[in-house]
Amino acid sequence: MRQVGRPKRESSLGEGVAQRPEGRSGLSLMPHVWPTVVHMLQDAARRAPEHPALRCGNESLSYRQYAACVAGLALELQERGVGAGQRVALMMANSLDIAIATFAVQAAGAQVVPLNPAYTSAELIPILADAAPALLLHDVAVAEVVAGSHEALAGVAVMVVGEGARRFTAWRDRPDLAERLPLPSPDTLSTLQYTGGTTGVSKGVDLGHRAVSINVSQREALLPTRPEDERILAITPLFHVYAVSMGLYLAAYCRGTLVILPRYRPDWVLEAIASERITLLSGSPTIFVGLMAYEGFGQADLSSLRLCFSGSSALSEETLRRWEAATGCVVAEGYGQSEAGPVLTYNPGEGLRKLGTVGYAVPQTELQIVDVTTGRNVLPAGEVGEIRARGPQIMSGYRNRPAETAEALRNGWLHTGDIGSLDADGYLTIRDRKKDMAIVSGFNVYPREVEDALYSHAAVIEAAVVGLPDSYRGERLVACVVCRHEVTVEDLQAHLQARLVKYKWPSELRVVAALPKTTVGKIDKKQLRLDLLAQAGVT
Image (tube, rainbow, N blue to C red; front, side, top):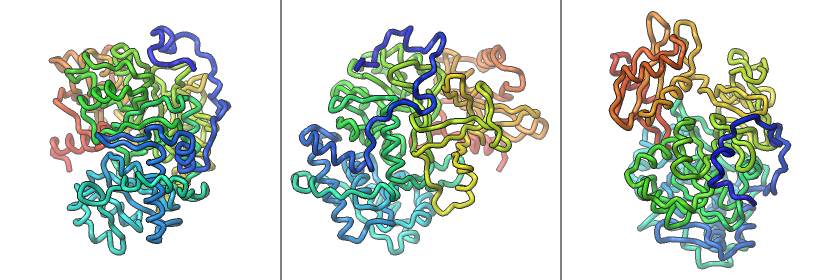
């Protein structure tokens, strides 16, 4: 297989006349699909028992040891009566333990509920009440928050994990357990993934085993891996659907080595890429920007990188070009959401890549652009509207939310709430979130378009644009930017005025030291908007 890292620059940017990709209508050949991801792990342990599977700090596990640990915990859960129809919540930071626990809960036949260990009790209580888990596994570090959530834990068993408590690596030296790994039914629920909540109250997304497993293979069709020859770096939180799909499951599929960092720090990331000879790096816009801004970036050895993935939020074209110019390594940008298993599209690892797009639909997946008012009228190529999708990886619904499920799943289609357009070759461009759209003097304005124009300024590192209420115009735009060197607001305003029609100009532009972030590294526009409203005296 031709390596996709360090391509000739003129061929990697997707310039010129696009050829219709084979996978545009889901016609690409699908690689092997396992009934569940637990079957996938079992196969990896049988094919490559001594191959390194997981590494975190000074600890490591081979695939035989990995499967033994998963089996040991799964069998214990079953002995406790935890199984089909039940849920097990994980409130754990990145570690070998959370990787083992994720697979073990699924192997036991229960539904895994990954939760953010940074949650406060106020955030945790309503989620626990909704999920109604039979068991909560949590790190020692969050014991105080869990104790403060006792009202939602009535009747819920609790297991503490970490130094001085339980370690799920305890079964590593029981190779016999690897052959006793329980296998769940593909027709049962695999994951209850709570949405980030940055646009409102978190909703629990129900994903089935078959949907989760097929989505791994769908991603593999566009971004093929090399069996037993990939080293993947996990730097985003393993409670997040992106890290699980593009790290935990990806590694098991290709029998690769997943190197887990406890948390993101630019010096740790760069050191790990060099020392662990990382080939695949899953990141986000914030991570790529942060790494390039780190003082040691220019001296880092990134020669092992074969391919980088970007997800979680939109990557500006300027950031992508700067990363590829600095590293020589391609960034494959994709698109998805928790409700879609999560992957819907990717720019292919081999074939035409179009900058500014998030690629085309993975196999067995259809995308359409529909009008934002009714969601029923399908729009032609080039027109902007709401993205809807259908395929075998789509959620079965939101837990305990029939009205929201009916709104999102209509006539067999998932209405994503994202705004975008498809070109004639089926490549998708994301414009914005439907709910982020601002109406300024009667005109629809998508903040991302303004943000992209700001990113094209050489000084801008990060940009966020939000709409605020305005008595005259209905809404007005406020832009906040982080810059790499001193620049005047007047210069930035002139830059925008040369690129955007007048009604898209922000009424206010601020240069700030930092933008608020969610725990998974996204720019937190909800918090930014609340901060701006508070500063304006609006409650």
